[in-house]
Length: 387
Image 1: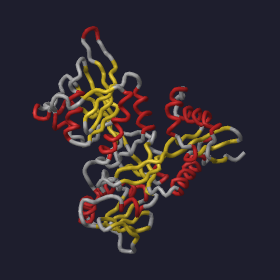
Image 2: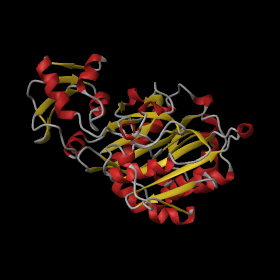
Image 3: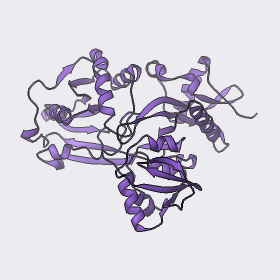
Image 4: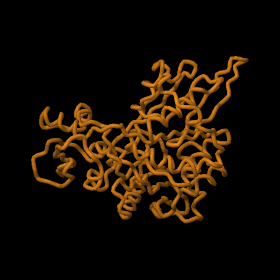
């Protein structure tokens, strides 16, 4: 029997959760389903059916992503992509992703984005890596802010998690517009993310930001070195950033502070008395992007110079820069494919990196120098919000 693709009905939801959990080697608990179900719009999801059995899932979230310069793009956040082990290599995954892309296009969302569970899947679907994601570890016993950066007393206060969502939302909206690659959050999303941390969540608020962490006690027979996980941080100003970190670094009985939400260009090392107290423990691919509407995507961002560059992607040439983005027949300065063109959108990947990585060619060295200056922007893109 041929596999059919269709939107799920409410009666398919539990089977959809089971299929997804099995594919990712986990099991959705009832409380996890209750927590995440409000984020799912069934008409944005698709399931693959073999007879009455759900053998694959995929979906998207309606998001808004920040691009360089503070502009935003409506984005289909692709998620829940899975296929039963019994139906691999049969075109099910491709059919599901095509159905989700068709839906994103029908909604007039110019950008598709995802975070990949494996690094070898999505380039063939025209996704390029546009940002990196890192893990850090801070030795709290060695780490403290330099005296000149420490905040005044009362700059940060602790709040009960029940109060946190209403306080976090406006602060998040300001902070996420500073960082390319970050996405918006509504009340449902913010509440879900906070609930995921659990009952041990500690919430700290500054006028221009917030932080959420959890402590895992490690008493070590009287030699306490509790492990602290920083799950969320938003800082719209340098003052908020320093004040929130000062609070974290003031925790007693603490050994390591670990996190996955700190960008690679975060200025924290420059604020510390000993910058080696912070170590990067892992760096992986972060956001994968697929430009569904190349013109609208590149016209939404700003650029590092007033120049423009002609980029040929899969045989189509685009003049991209401060003057906009349009199709041309002019000689190409750079040649690449759609995935690598998508990687350039957020400014975190330099054309010269793609050239040395053999994903792009340049007409000459001067063109490449101009292209790097045009596309690269600060701050570097980062998305700490999983979807």
